[in-house]
Length: 81
Image (tube, rainbow, N blue to C red):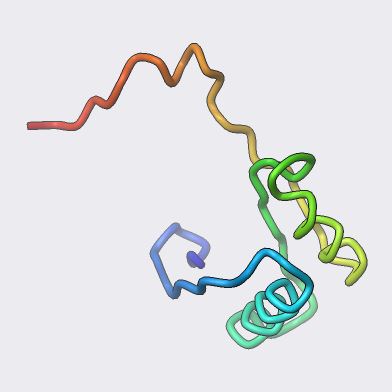
């Protein structure tokens, strides 16, 4: 979880099943009180589909996060040395 300017706030590890999704939603509610919450999910129609379905059932607002194309990822890492 990050704050509005991208600072790390907390981390949670869950199972990819209904119980894990409920745990995630409860955790997010605890950390982000109020009615406005946006879920940004990479792969919402593939590996994130189960979570996306659970969030939609809970009437959550979801956006799909674009991932880099394979061509863009093939250039390897570019860490500063």
